[in-house]
Length: 219
Image 1 (cartoon, one colour):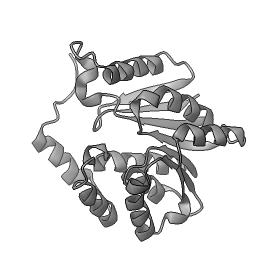
Image 2: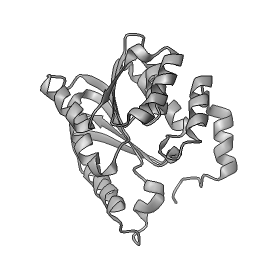
Image 3: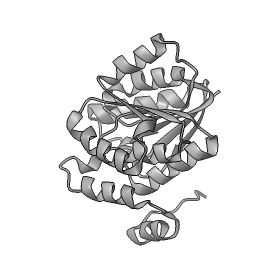
């Protein structure tokens, strides 16, 4: 018999009430982003807390983010990094990341974050060309879905053995499990999930947190 719970609104709010320890600045950033026309791109607060938990648990010092938006995930990670830690953050929007920069500064973590405003694949390929393969502890992918396979390929090269790649939106609002949904992006995410399931370079866990979060631990 399957062992799972349907996450009702009351149960979700119970989880938040009894586990979320969201710093004031993260809450302010989340509330500001909620008024943004693209607010659906922001990760949930419990996901941000979970990612910070993982970074702290790993003792990570060097992290990578592909897709910044207004900075909730990068701030969650940066707060969990030690003072001499570094997060390489990749995005193409100066408008969105201006909000992120404001909160990074207010939180006192700007010195930990190196923002690259360029197509992420250019940044990732440059990091590889500079000899930074196998040097990152943690990577988070949350950007354009069509490039997920390419982002994953580069991220897996960049993280060290024992390093972790986290990938967002892998359940795609549940559409991946509905065979009647056959649009291009849903099919791409299905294929991507299948690819990771068969990838023997990693240990794998797909978690039903927020919109689905895959954790790929590099062997």
